[in-house]
Image 1 (cartoon, rainbow, N blue to C red):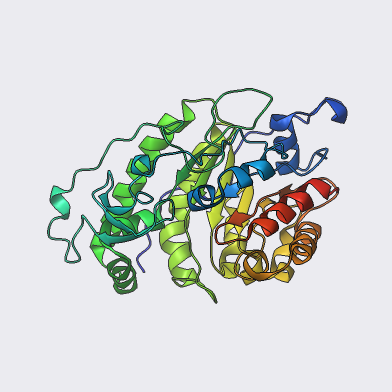
Image 2 (cartoon, rainbow, N blue to C red; image 1 turned 90 degrees about the horizontal axis):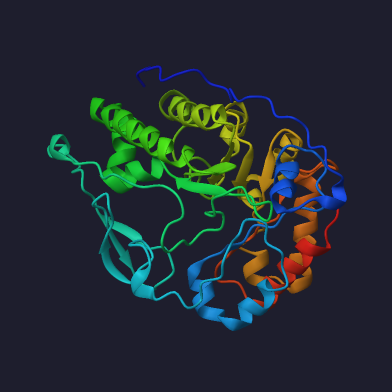
Length: 361
C-alpha cells in the first residue's frame, strides 16, 4: 500500500474547563458532557437508537414507552412520517440519492441496499463525476437522534452522521472498492482524496452551526473481524479520520464514531485518533477487549441486538444492560445509554429503557 501523508494524528483539541455547577442542577446538555468527559453525571444520559421501521411497527405503543424517558438529545418519535418522504435509503422502492447511488428498499423505514453506483468499476467515467453540494444541520426528515442544533441546556446538540468508507462503497460498489484497495490502484487514492476534500468542505458547514458534537459512522467489521486488513486501515484510512477529527476537535466539539462488526483490531487506533464517544458492538468484540478503554473514551452502548434484545426475555435484557454498563463505565461516567432497536419485541424495548432508568454509577 502506497504511503501518502494527509496530516498528523491525534485529537488536537483545546482543553476544556471542568464543570462547576452543583450536580443537582444538571440538565441534559451538561449531563452528556459530564458523561463524555468523566465529570460525574447524575445518571447515564439516554440516546434513542430506534429505527424508523420500529416506529411504524409499534406506533402509539412505542410512544407510551418513550414518553416515560427523558432523552438527552432532543429526539422526536416519528411514527406518522409518510414513507414517501423518507430519504432514498429508507424510502420503499427503487430510489436514487444525491450522490447518484441507486437504492433498493423492500420495506419503508428499514435501510435498503445500494444496487447502482455512479462511478463505474473500470473508473472510465470518474473524470465526469459531479460531486453534490450538501447543506448541514437539522434534516427536514431526520431519522437519527441528535440532529438538534443550538445551545439549549435541555439537550446536547449532536449533528452529522458523516461516512467515508461506506460512501466510497456507495459511489464505486462494495466489491470494486475492496478489490481496488487490495490491488493498490491509483484511482482509489484519487477517490479517497476527492471524498476527503468533499467531507472537509461539508464539515465547515456543520461547524458553522451550534453543535456540541459531530457524529461519524463507518461499519468496519464483519461478524468475526475487519473488512480490510488493519494495515490498509492504518495506511489508507487512518490519516483521513485524523484530518476530519482534528478539524472537529480544533473547533471545540466532541467526536462521536459508530462502527458495527468486530473492530477489535483497530480499537487502539480509534483511541489514538481521539474518538470521544464510540458506538460499537460490544457483544461481537467482547467486553474483555473493550474494558481496558473504560475511562479513556466514552461509549454509546450497543446492547446485544442479535441475541439478547431480539430473542431474550425482559430479565435477560436488564441483566445485559447492567453487565455492559458495569464493564464500560466508571464511577466518573463514560456511558451514553443506548440500544439499537429493530426486530425487537415491544416488551424487550420496555425492559431496555427500564434498565437505563434504573442504573446508577
